[in-house]
Length: 185
Image (tube, rainbow, N blue to C red; front, side, top):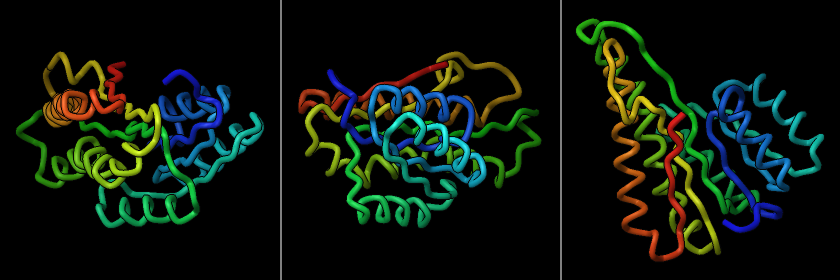
């Protein structure tokens, strides 16, 4: 993407941490933002910071572990006339502990937020993104998607999967002009 000014970006996990940092960086470059997070207070605080940078911002509380919430949020965004050029799949959560103590509920929630939500968001927005010149998908994957360690099995699994999904998207759509990349902090 040559120019960010005037583009629109959807960022998940935007209320704090890396998501907040990406939101502020894109706002400084002139991108309008649509921010999703489960933390409404954090979203409101980031919205104040972003608005001070002179760009438009919309926020929406969204539990990314719930597919119906994702569909509702994307429909609301598109219904407001906000058409993303950039999709940043940043939201994530972790469970640290012995693998044998992880419950099915731990695995389900973690895989839903870290892997299945980015897949669903991409699926729902792919027709729109493909129609935008210089559109880009950024999946925040983590170094844990490249190098495994102990007591973090579900997180590693989800991030390895997201790296694989990113590579598959790039192979399928890269020649059509859609940028797809993984960020592994």
